[in-house]
Length: 386
Image (cartoon, rainbow, N blue to C red; front, side):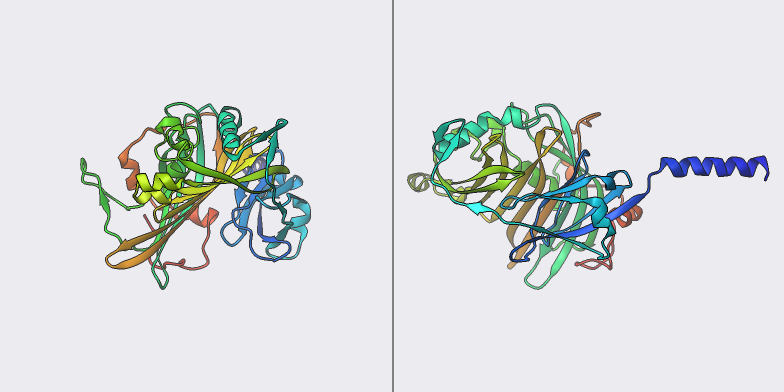
């Protein structure tokens, strides 16, 4: 063998050793009793920052190296007991898709005891708001998300927009706690039925519903008086009705369900679209962390679930549902967002800019085929691209 061939073989073997083999774990999370899907379940690998969330059908997919396949997978969802599974055993199964069954757990209660104090619903929410600095990051961070927005008419999906979004936030307390977002990748199917919006200064066009806006809208804890119309804004806190609506478990902690809505006398004084504002907050009694917030106003419904990563909570699953009337037709806009990774080192600062709404990023087929392959042309059909 020549020295050149020997050298090529040696280099090839080194690169083979340095590039760990990957395996793909596909599964579906279902209710152990009803066998119905469990959407937006949290799926994390022990001793790593790797995780994902199941989609609306309970389906998930994870790429793992050989080393990570030696760990355990933790599957959790509010209202269910945690499932701990050996990844090795899951990969040895002959089925193409692993079925993970979560055991439901729900009870009801009339009062809550936290730190040996019996608290009213309003007092518990105040305690949870006071605990935001210890439960959520106060240092700048990035979050990378996979986003999928479907525009549906009465018959089918007419437009399918997928994006990889990078989010920047300074922290969860203080005057500058908003999420600013830009798109890293984009894939489209079909055509938007709505005329594009336009930036006045530059005359540039963009899709009416920028995916990053939903993240800003739903993740509004800690914004305090600058938070606008949100239950976490002290300015409107005293205009709400609060009540307990049961408790459950999440990540082996008791979670209290707290419902809120506008008070009747305030609805009479301040009529308008926001009178429909109300929602449900899930608070973990052990940490006082808000682990889920479901709310709505007007024709939009929002849902965010938080998951602890490296000691603090981050929004790992977001869902919004809109009704939108255009040209005498009713459209439904469903948007799901799932966390790909949390970045706490070498954080990229994103300043607010309307140019981010344009999402002027090239379509990279290799990226989408590797990470989110499709069996056909997709629900909306049409040409892929950006």
